Amino acid sequence: MHHWGPKSQPFLFCSLAKLQPLRISPTLSLSLTNTTIYCLPSILDLHHHISLYSSSKSTMADANPLSQFFLFLFLVCLATCRNGVQGFREKNKVLDLQEFRSKQHSGTGTRTSACLSQKSRKEKGATILEIKHRDYCSAGKIVNWNKKQQKRLMLDDLHVRFLQSQFRNRISGIATKDVSEAQIPLTSGVRLETLNYIVTVELGGRNMTVIVDTGSDLTWVQCRPCKLCYNQQEPLFNPSESKSYQSVLCNSTNCQALQFATGNSGVCGSNPQTCNYVVNYGDGSYTRGELARDHIILGTTLVDNFVFGCGRNNKGLFGGASGLMGLGRSDGLSVVSQTSGLFGGVFSYCLPSTEAAESGSLVMGGDSSIYKNSTPISYTRMVANPQLSTFYFLNLTGISIGGVALQVPSFASGGILIDSGTVISRLPPSVYKAIKAEFLKQFSGYPPAPGFSILDTCFNLSSYQEVNIPTMKMHFEGDAELTVDVTGIFYMVKTDASQICLALASLSYEDEVAIIGNYQQRNQRVVYNTKESKLGFAEESCSFI
Image 1 (tube, rainbow, N blue to C red):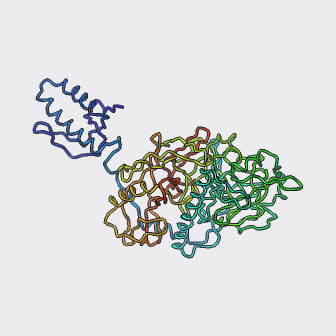
Image 2 (cartoon, rainbow, N blue to C red; image 1 turned 45 degrees about the horizontal axis):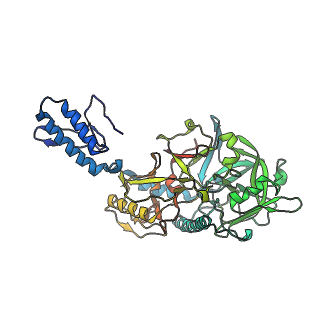
């Protein structure tokens, strides 16, 4: 494709940053300060444009300097525009470390009241739910934030290791023989304590705060009577108090859908023939109960006969939430599927950080005019993965650091998973190695710090008030891109910034499934359109208001 500049202004052929005046020959001096420079696709195009330009001149003396100039420019293009990607660095982002530290400490107070009854509203046919980070929802107060940060990394490591093993089992066709011994279902994102974001819904007339997870399909809450339940902040859901509550029978299509949604078949109860579900997780956590129907209100939108799990026997680290909301891709039981008639199979979110006053939004419905994005939404197609069909996969085509495109053979073979339940993004070893090398090249001169857990590129920035850090972009098929927010590039292991690390980690092997975690999704509007099988990104400062 040829790119032409305005006829009234000089133009060159290569996309470069602003340059100082260049002297190409004794008779030709050009200033490139206000000149747009475009990339040529080939030497033949270069020769063609030189010929056209030269033929308009009256003498060869005029053409020779121009030919010299274009030849010089072509050599510059070779060095800076390989594969159509700019080689000049982008302007760094400024990270205010004092503000970063103070925001981390602001989460150390008592947070219980902030967890309950998140706000909601309806606007232009879409339902908007306030979304908060779960750290500010847990009961009590965080005494040692450093330990909390470190613990999250260790748990995130365990969750990804277990998740990868389950992916391998599914791809190789290995299945568990006994439902009671089944491991974490491939459609579930409840991985230890790493699920981070919560919303409030109304189920059977009662407000329930639930964890949001794009890696799960089945929505469930703890129910009375409960044989074994973990501690939660709200009263347990009591089916006997809801006139609209109904048990799902074991011979129903909803019961049969459990196999696809959870990896475990429904089990028939007795008197009556209810459908019992079992979901087990890798750390020993689990939820078991009966499949049921009831009215659920998302914001102000009523959904009749919503199918969910009524958990009678539950154990695990679910952070005081009442249960979980499944936003996976399954056609049967996920919230997306059950509300497709209302919202068209479209939802989006903007994930806030962990600070006390921060909130974001979960939007059910596809009217993009209600978003507050500061950049246009760029879309990429969802990649089909037959073995892992309920997850959201994308085709990652490139990564750039500070505007410099990384040169690696493959960025994510088979696609990269985008997941709200994973914290830190995981990349193939070859890709992570290239990111680390380029980042250290651009972010140089700062004292190093020891690595911690899954993070091995760390610095001691305790003596700095602010630092300039390179931009980070992920590029996807269809020219879509995710520009990582400045708060999603560094992970603060210690709140005095004496140990602050690049918030990316390497997978153990090249053939493992790469993951985009929620840390790199902060302050982004992420749009899931399951009907058109596409996903979009746009920058947005997360706020419910």
